[in-house]
Length: 114
Length: 110
Image (cartoon, rainbow over all chains, first blue to last red):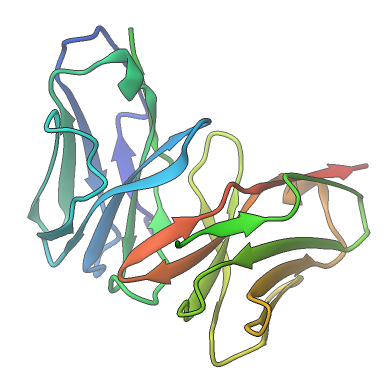
């Protein structure tokens, strides 16, 4: 079975550029989560969706970050403009429902902002 | 506040021995717990979960124990193998959010 699919796996870009990260959740899963992982802060939840609707975006660090889920099989996380401190690994996860169900993670996008 | 803490940041075991990874949590309202394994360059991988109405659950070579009285969770890995080397995260799910601890790095010596 296909798991959560993220693209690109690696992204290197210069500060100020727009970055778009993509995620395809597991088919049939109704909840989708975006996380960021750094050595300093560990794994942080940025935003999550239920049935394509954003439920909690309190973890989104700044207005430079935005996320969309236009349909049940696709989500994007966009950073515009990007800054060096945005460098991290960004993970997408999905679950059948938001509460009390395991979340299944993709292999992440390693983002480097120069 | 809400937090999940791990007692040991690193654990080194001999291949074939049993491993025990411990976790303390602070929120007594927590009702669902998950252990994840993260290998280098990969996302966290679900290992096993347990709900607060249970105190023990077993999987293949893994057992999770939950002590709600002292708010403690542990993951036991039987006959540890080199492929078990990874960072292990204790998490709890509340309000749709997964709260991750800092992780414990398990190193298996051949």
